[in-house]
Length: 513
Image (tube, rainbow, N blue to C red; front, side, top):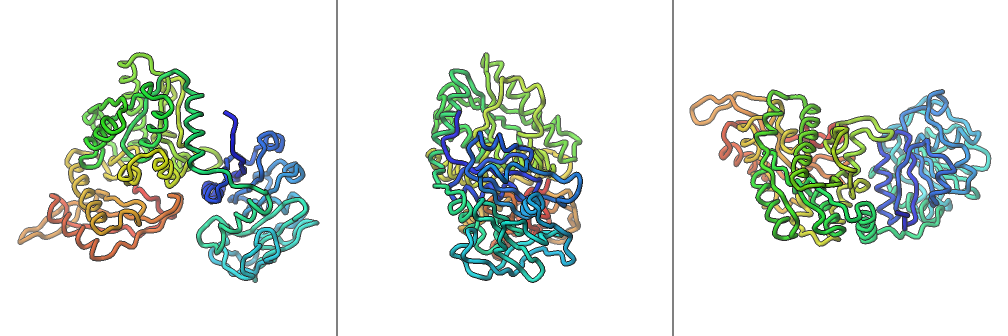
C-alpha cells in the first residue's frame, strides 16, 4: 500500500541509538522509516523522503572497512542531518578533515551554539549536550559554517544552509542533551519543511487498511498472550477482518497469577473474538526440563508456540496468516539490520523456517511500547488492559533463573502478584514503566522464628523509561519496598531474602535473561 504520510529516512550506520532517533522524530508528528546505510540515492528519491538522518556508529570514517553512504545523497536535493559518526561521514565525504581527538569526549559537555542557525534557532547560546566520540571534525568542508563548538571540539555542529546539509557531533536524541528534541524539530520543520501530518489516529486507520489489503478474504490466526502488544495487534486485525481472525491463547503455564482467566474473560466476552484457549503447560514444561540457558529457553518457547499454532490452525481447517505482536525493540535487540544481537525475541529470531503459513501479519512492527499503548487507546481498548505491565513472550521462563519447575513458578507468581499489588496501592503503577519480580537461582541462609532456613532470593526490578531502549532504575519509596519485602517473606513459602535491582539500561537489560 502506498504511504500516505510524508516521511523522513533514518539511515542506520550501526549506532546504538538508531531507534531512539526514530522515536524522537515521531514525537514531532513526522513519520520516519529506518533503512540501512546501503540505501541508494535513487531509492531515496523514488520513495519521496522529506529528509535523511544519518545515525552514529562505532567505526572511524577513515578506516577502509567503515560503512559509507552513496555520495549522491549530498547532491540529490534532500536535506541531510548527520549525527556523531554521521556528522563525521558528511565532513569526510565532502572534503573536510576528520581526525582522532587527543581529548576524548564522553557524556555531558558544555557547548556554545549559534542561535541564528537553522538547527539552533530560538535556543540559548550555551547549553549541555551528550558527546560520545574519539574522532572529531577538525576542519569543515567548503561551504559549511561552524554553528556550535566546545573547549575540546572545534566543530560541535556545522551546516550548509544553501544545500540543506547539517551535522551534529553530539546526540540530540538522548535526554541528556538540553533542548535536543527542539534541535531535531528545527531540522524537520526549518530545514526539511515537514508539516507534521503523522498521528496515531492516522496510523490506526492506515494499518487497518493495510491489513485488509494484505489479507483480503483469507483467514488469520493470532497468538494472543494477553499482553499489551499481542492485544493491540489482535484488535487491529479484528477491526480489519472481523470473524476471519481466530485468536489462539496458548496458556503455557508461564503467565502471571490468574492471568489466563483474565485474558479469556476480556477477549471472549468483551471483544467477542473467536478465541481458543489451549492448556499447554505440561507440554512446555516438559520441553524446558533441565534447560537453564536463557537463549535456549527463548528458542524452545518460540518454536513450541508456532507448533501449537499450526496444530490448532489445522483443526480449524485452512488458516493462511499468523499475526504477531512484534514491536520495534524486539527487532532491534534481536539484531535485525545493522545492530548487534543483544538477545533473541521469540517472535523475531526464534521462529522456525517452516512456520506453515502464507506469511506474517505484524501490525506493530514499527512501533515502540508507548506508541503501542496510544494505538490501543485509539482503538478503544480499556485502560486496565492498555496499561497492563509489559510481559515478555517467553513469560516467567526468563524470570526464573536456571531450570524451570512447578515449585519455582508458584513461588514467583505469588511474589510478583504481591509486588504489583503494592505498587498499585501506592499509586505508582503509571509512574514506573515496568516492574516485576525475578526468582534468582541463589539460595542463602536465613532465620525464621528459632529455625535456620536455606531458601530462595527474590529480586525486584522497576524501571522508568520513555522508549524501553534505555531505562533508569525506579526510585521506589523505601516504605513501599519494605511492605513488599515483608509480605513476600511472610506469605510466600521458600523465600527468605529480597533484593532490589538498581542497575540502569545500559549496561543491563530490563529483563534479567
